[in-house]
Image (cartoon, rainbow, N blue to C red; front, side, top):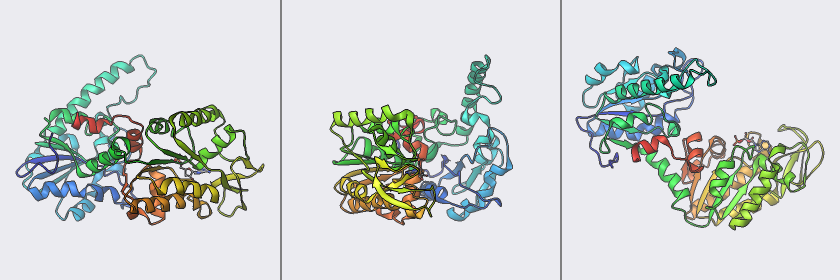
Length: 416
Ligand code: AMP
């Protein structure tokens, strides 16, 4: 199998799927260019070898229709500035054969938003799933998706996928296109390589002890991950809003804390599974309770199972923070997804901060730490600790599916 490092792209045309789905303000200015910066090493390698680049991406959710609000022309100049070279623009991604053919060594062509075509996502539009004609429409759309992917593939000699954010989708540009290239002409980009390696480190190449920290608001959205990790981790910290579902399941009073009443059995099941697997399950014993969901609320430290009526747990308490830190500091592999409290409000950041600090300490002692899922990334950035962890994933949904143990179509299409 080819890798980006073992390939020399001189004299070749290379089509690269990137994730340039960057946030724009109302004037079309980029408000966060992290995703563009993330793809630069791959794009630069192709240009440095003397290849010609065809860059493709989606932006937003235009739902298969042309919509200037989501036009990639808005970011052409920014891409050009970052690459340090002129960027041509193809206003129709499915009619760019001539522009691609005319590209010379070192030249760059940016294709218009792939999702202006419904074929990109491959889902039939304007027909309800219940409609008897839906299955036929789906089949027809899948055939059109193949054709669309083949058109994109025809522009280039090589295909590189560097869009981890969409690796969990079987779209024309993320997976189907790979069928048009043999193993020597398709590969992961540098960003994808790093993401795949990071996931490998926490699922297969585990150095022990392994501590996973799952937080956020609800247990129901994390259950797939918790189940997949149950036979891999040594320590499992479950924190954030889900604390109170466990506290209630254990017979506690949780006041008006966030609590999934219909998941109490699930919580007990998780506790039993942890015990059966010899996993050290760490739940918050105390919490910072507030009398309002507000940064200005009155607060008190109470046991997580004895929250007074009218109060709600919004952060981990001091005893819990110590227990979290103890389970993290000696770990050699760490995975963190989801905050330990309502970190968006300054007075409820202490739990998440304690976790971040313990991860930084363990990382400094040689642990591998992976932070992923939107909110824990936001947390680490808020605390200015991004450079103190091993790897911060760029792919929210894709990372979560990967650590749930699901195969990512974007990766499988290349690695087989
Ligand atoms: P999720 O998207 O499930 O990862 O949840 C992230 C959100 O959980 C963040 O916006 C946090 O503010 C929220 N969260 C964390 N702890 C609590 C809590 N104790 N009560 C309510 N929300 C919480």
